[in-house]
Image (cartoon, rainbow over all chains, first blue to last red; front, side, top):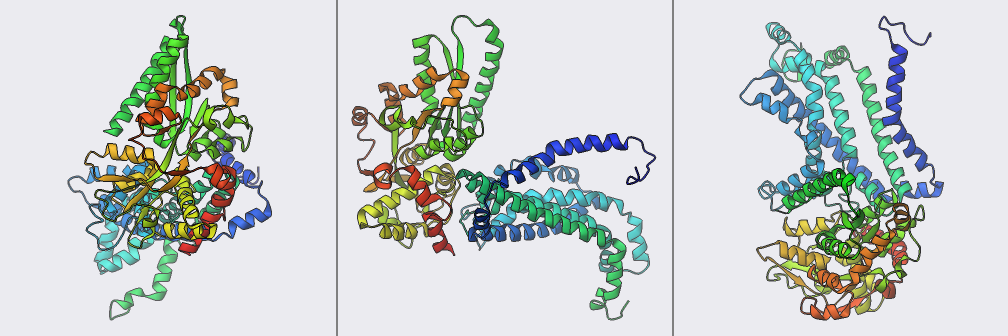
Length: 289
Length: 343
């Protein structure tokens, strides 16, 4: 019993056992099956799959589109969350409900809708001077659409938790609005922002349904990793497909782990400490703080 | 319109299933039986009408009420679904190779399936043709016109689409026939795929890209799919171009032995496929823009199907097994071509 800290709340073993059973049945077992299945592979075959240039290009594309999309969506999403929490305007409640729609909509529908909007003959595509559909940019737009709720929904409760009085206090102590953002809001929001970012990124790496429509699916150029899995499946190459999916899983896991480590290290007071050391405000004001 | 029809069909199917369940205890002498047909995408319209035809025939012959359930999807995906346990009594897929694949992990079907029905288990065939925009503005008449520098070609990805594999092989068969060597064919197909700006994952996807989104100058497509697209598009803004040489596409049909033996439906499933060769069914097939295998019926519809030189997979390429290993496996000829174009 020594490795469990005594708690006043009863039912620890029951709770742990119950949740472990469900976790095993629903999450762990499929993953274990995946790994076991991939073990069928011969070493040479594994090497041949992993050193394939097409795989490398698909991995690179998936990683950078997911990263850029997650980054943009976390900025866009923060702004949206801020507006939704801090301002009341006609339709704000409706807008709040609509944020979840990308989750509800089948991703294929989203993909087809975005493609018709952004291809050369589409409403937006014909206005823009550059190509969006069938390029990596199109992939990113689809990913931003699909992952927007992650960021908004993780940031909303945090923003709600920052009382207005803190902002008023900062102002009355002479902070301008940029200082308010940098020294008060940013440190408080950063951990949640990071969570939203990593959720979006992980989701983006595995996204398939919406992307196959807006991407041209040309190998080496616009072929994403999940499509490679599907095309291996369609060749009846089950083992190859499993190996590639484990690769995606490992990359996502490494990424989430890294974000978690960063989150554990970067607490609001640490951010303040860093900010105080480097005085970024000195860049904007003549007098150092 | 199409969507509504589908939804209506779904509603009716669900409705009839529920009626069937409630009516089950009250059934009289005639049995209610059902079979499941796993087919590929473009046969939706064909089998919708054929199922009515066959159900009437079966009712008249045995008195049983037959319901044929349909499942449609990419040909390879359907094969995989059956491998993974979809209880399809019969499969009607885009290529024999996908039916052979059913035995890949467990023996589901007699190895000799292709000889169990007439005409190599191919009751209807089709070929690969071009769909171009009205008036044929880019003057596309044969395969050679597709590799001109101002042409954009729409064709799906052979890795994920059965139809795309036929397109690839049709181009290859043409070049090999015209220029005489495999090397020349390789160069021709490479030049062709360099003109492909997007590869959808399915033949229907490519048709949508070409027809609805206005992408590309020419769509390489099944003949039946091209006619279907032309019929659906009321504005008459497409033309079908039949090249001088193309490939005889042979969609194949088979009874899945392990499943019919388990369900006890071998008799009806076999009859379902055999009746495809009857005169009324062959006419229905022609009306749905597939080429019937019965030469007499082909003659009836001869103005519908232009004649052209048709190469077969067995004679030109030595069968699907060899085609798959040589062209479409990992690091096969298709992969090599794309690597040379794109990298």
